[in-house]
Length: 124
Image (cartoon, rainbow, N blue to C red; front, top):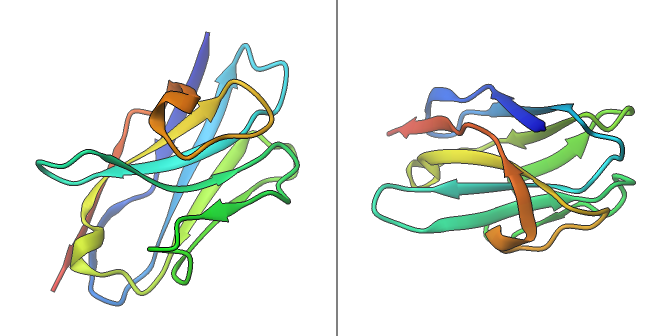
């Protein structure tokens, strides 16, 4: 069994910054790609960013790439999403997810295991 435990998030004012963490544990014999998604109230789950096994294959959606950065620690077990210059439209529940292989896609079906979700609220 693989578990993804998320931390970070919370309430922040417009223009502020937050860092989300996603720690992988359990039967993880390989370092797989991890992605971040978010879901606003009444909307679908949208792709934000993903990072491959090597860490050099980080990719963020054009809608956030100038403000959000995805990275992972040297061991590969924890992935971070650094968010800056936050806007009210960034308010959502954020999820991390682990892909089945070294590279992750940009749709939810590309991912096997999901974190519990964490609320990010940006107040104006």
